[in-house]
Image 1 (cartoon, helix red, strand yellow):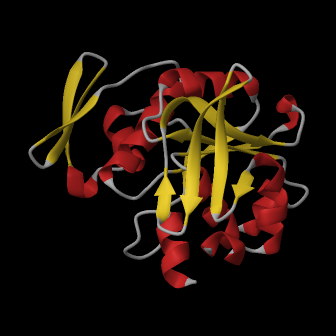
Image 2: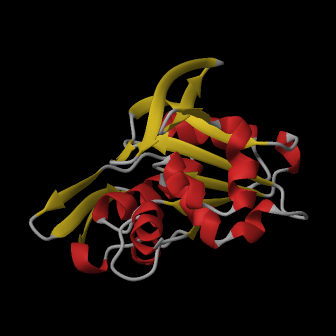
Image 3: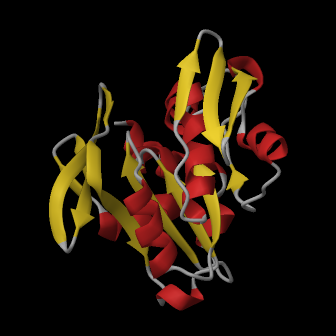
Length: 206
């Protein structure tokens, strides 16, 4: 299985936060100390849940965490770290969180309260769902909630009593922040080339 082709430092770092059953890697999503959902990485791909729980990886005191990585998928986060393993070594103090296919304001507010000193990074897909998720996390960081919807070939949203329309082809967190005049200081990470996710990039290359 492609999981075993990840760099050893990645498998060792994340090993305590996953389970392996045969040829399936299982990532538990937890809410209020209870496992409520699971993500599965198997030979035929990845099944990511829609969940109110969070797959959370941290080995530092919450107040000392300097960088918080948030994504849709635990497997995608592992594949990202395969290409950028320097994030896993001292002096980095990092936490990784997967929110599932439909992230919520509650999840992000919970993470922000747990890790108040952490810079937020996002590891969402390159498609429109991932780019919208980047923007949602940015607004949730400030406790705001902005609704986005597709209208033909544009992303429509309402912000501070004004409607905005941005073409899907150029929509991004950077473009969104320029239009609304607000910056959340969030760093986005996307795979290179034609790939939508780091998992796709990894499994197509190895």
